Image 1: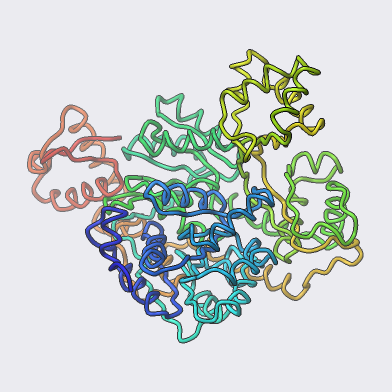
Image 2: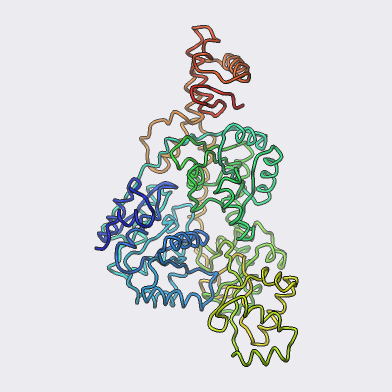
Length: 634
């Protein structure tokens, strides 16, 4: 064995000690045991496979379904001088070939792959030549049909083990019910597997459900009361803009984020929020995965997610620093109706599924028997407009086809423009003489970028257009002309979702859908939905409900959720509580007071219930502390 894990941790990450369970998980992997690690959001899952990868000769293969997360991980590892690379559908065949070659020849320590790319003939052939020391499976719950985010391609991972019989598997997830825990081990062919699971309890995180019709005004009230950084989750892209605008009108620093925003812009928005320049990010569930911002004080859901797994993971992004934080759900009776309607739409008739599949073949001009392994830019809006399809029904039909392994649709994948000069220098000189209008463009490329004759260069089209004093659109047309003339190989900038066909295209009449599994997945979806609705509507300790769902059935009441706080005040009638609250507000709006001075304003027999009320208001964030003084927050 090489360097000790703790020495690797200190050298590359600068940490003096591991977080709970990290060291045990790492040692299990280094001992060659198949291992399943269940760590809460922010528990440091990535270090559990990155450290053992560095402790042994060879390369670690990391399977992940999240392209943005893969790219973020690779960037962070490279910043620490750890050679890492990622393969996904946004790459050309040449890039994939080169990346796999580097991995074979020992120039990479961690290679990230999507499950679809892992099982291609090209990848399997190269993997057999690699010195693999560990197979890490991130978001491992995706392999289970019992889970909330089932990905059929994950089922192919076990086949890779046939080529790597001596290589241990380390599976990692933040959310798994006991049923999913068993299923993960079975589907990944664990041999004498070990399971390490920390409690899902978050003692510093207060779960709150507020029944509200006027959600936007309640949100402004919450953001006003709870200082610090926050995330607000909404269901659709339109609402991200609306809610962010509403907060800004109140003088609150807020921005919006969703998968439809160009990747560079999303990166800027995320960075501004990470650095504290933006206080509140209003987002769809595309935001937050893989982000390690410790000081998030609040996560507010304007809509109830359709599973407790999704809610728990998103809410868990608050309070990673161990300080008090709030996870608030704003709920109203109409939400239940909307969720149930969406669940019904999520499983469209088979006729609709066949119609969408048939249209895809025409859209990409694929003949029957072709398409396997090919990736295409894909715009759902443009696709629906082209074939006059309903966007909602089409979206869910695509999900069904994806779950049945016909193709996979990724989030937006950003790839800068790339260019290679294909002719010799002499031939290029002759071409410039015959086409003088192209000379400024070609000369600028040669002066600005090195090595364009030898390898592909990353081309910044906007920067080059400014240098040439040309509209960017005109520059792109000129580059396309040079490409058609065979002078350069020009690959334009790409920033769109990718649809990758996993099987050859068949005629729609021959489309196979596993009807039994379809009904099973539908029933599981409804079961998860009912559990989420029960969480919002049941007057039981919120933390207890969440922990019981994930198998911790003996957890005590948390004492800090909205249900527990209400139970802490048995001696105060609603009238008395309102009266005391008015008195407290009146006193503290004049100036902050110590607890002793505040209680002195009330008769002795009222001081005990008032103390309970003060603690309740502090827990809710309506009051704050400055040293020994209590202040009014509203």
